[in-house]
Length: 163
Ligand SMILES: CC(C)(COP(=O)(O)OP(=O)(O)OC[C@H]1O[C@@H](n2cnc3c(N)ncnc32)[C@H](O)[C@@H]1OP(=O)(O)O)[C@@H](O)C(=O)NCCC(=O)NCCS
Image (cartoon, rainbow, N blue to C red; front, top):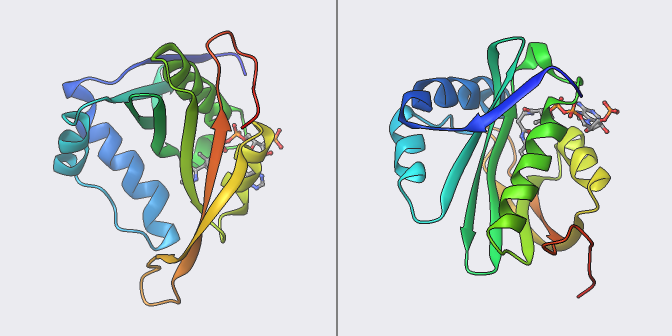
């Protein structure tokens, strides 16, 4: 878990974030976000990004939107060569903290049923399945994949609550 540096994303990070997104999601058959896509999202109300560096190299990022008492994880990606070392968990922890600090009561996300690694990461953090979107992800020429909608209940003091 140690050795990571986490900081808020800024305008100078758009190219790096787009490159990380492309490298992470193109192999899944998803459309890679361009610099413009990331810039437009970052300019949207309530959206913030977190960039993670390992040993001085920027290897992961996450984007999150907070609106009123609901937050949404928009994306999370870690460079392939740096996976399974806790970077994804560290980014998710930072997103959870940001959402909680902003007053959100819930953090939502969508994950493909064909993405067991990400599902495992979210399960570790006690996200609960609250819905399913059939055929939500277009996987290139392949069959579309369903999305699982997950929710983590948040409180400001870090204790979970039901409901
Ligand atoms: C999902 C992703 C962000 C995880 O990043 P990561 O840095 O490898 O994650 P971590 O090392 O913090 O893993 C934390 C836990 O998640 C689970 N996990 C992560 N990747 C996994 C995999 N490929 N297979 C099984 N479990 C996995 C494990 O439980 C892991 O804990 P462990 O290593 O102690 O067993 C990364 O694989 C990625 O960028 N994938 C492509 C983009 C993507 O799918 N994003 C999510 C879209 S919803």
